[in-house]
Length: 367
Image (cartoon, rainbow, N blue to C red):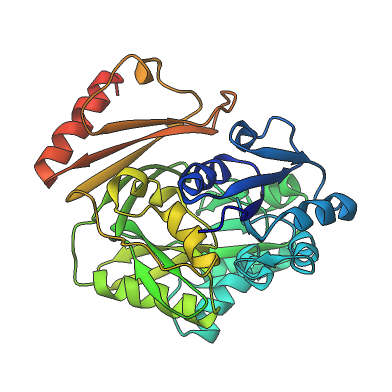
């Protein structure tokens, strides 16, 4: 392996940090581009601080790099396209354009790929909001088309919602109203695909959310009659996009089947368990896929795994307690309400052992 490969990452958050940590053993060096001087990825590599519209800085950044990828899907598409003129980038900026716009994403799923999604309506005016709410029987979620994540930019719509007041509060803009899908559980598929079309999938993840933010992932998800279909849907999306890298596809599972919720064109929070829980982590496989290297095994290192997010602040016991097969990841971010500042992973040989370890961890934390 040549040791001159430099990987650039647009965005300097914890995903960039974990990509670097898993890329170092392969002999790669990392450069991060972020508008924020205290971006936590700067703890593990060179950090260029500049705005995404600074083409001079972007060109300097790109020319250092053999390959470039993303820390998050809201990197401005124009910045990604500019970088692509100067070096190799994955996944393609066209994928970012779709993933950044909830309406375009839903159109891809339903109209191009004929995949099941909940009913949705474009909302650009108050009259369109009233029509959409009536069409979904006052049961849905009004979401910004762009820049929403972890529950941000979302408003629950019920019979009790004062639509006039809501529209005045959000002060207009481009939105999508999604019919509520009443599901039994939320699952995600994490896959890696290279430019040759080879795909490897990790075990199906079962995810727990609170106020729109992921709190816990359990792997493998309890099998159901819909489990195989989840992988088929995710592969269909990846192939349609000629995707390169790790892709996450989140879905709702109901009694009648699966409904696609959204995709993330990057390594994903629900795949963090793979650092200790899989033979090859999602982070290493993202790099392997993008650089044309053989994909690593996605088999689990033990039979079961779990991931627990630390939101707002790191528990005080994180460095004073060391339980077997329990791992702590602290990102180096300032504590802030609603912010992901770290996570723990747990691995176990069987479901009962995993349950016991997770309960013990929860008790340790006073949860």
